Image (spheres, rainbow, N blue to C red):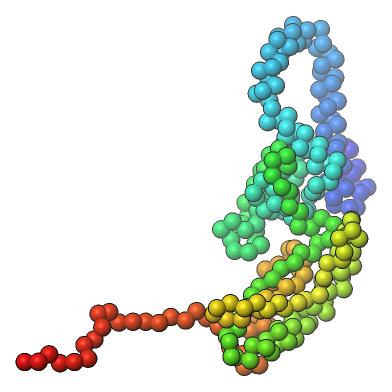
Length: 266
């Protein structure tokens, strides 16, 4: 009945999910407490045995206890919640459930290129929050920085490549710059480190083969591959219109053995 009432009374999907989980845990705890109260007298002998073997049980149940402690840390410190995109225990995915023992992730990446779903649901022990860093892509501000590099040939009007690339992504920049800056400014502690640059930038670095022009931009975490595809297509079109040549590694082919250039004397 409690879950049905929460379904009808709460509109927000996240809070509806949270209330349902609390109702289930409360019901399980109440049932366990009642059962222990009824069978307390009969359990006295069993408790004596458990006390004698408590050290062994503590060692055997250590992973479960650590996982439950991890769950308490996740909930209390809001490391992540259902719907966040995180990297946990070496797995990247969208959080679909936060249980007492495990967190379920809808996996992205792995054998699939870029940030695309694989379709697998991965269960990661909550103990991972004590052993590995927790990367949250969407907490606070849903934007992250991304970049890609375009190799420009020397002598191919490379000095115009910066403006050509910036002009190519102007439409995208006008869409995302203002909301991204607003969201980033809301991050806690940002005043202590300064406001990061949310405007699209092109950085030039020299290599022995070409001029490397790197486009850096902000993007919604879940739109990373789509936006990169769009910006790379626009960049290629802009460079072609400007007559700027994309560089590629050069190869020198040699024939072996070399062909003789003289005639043998008779």
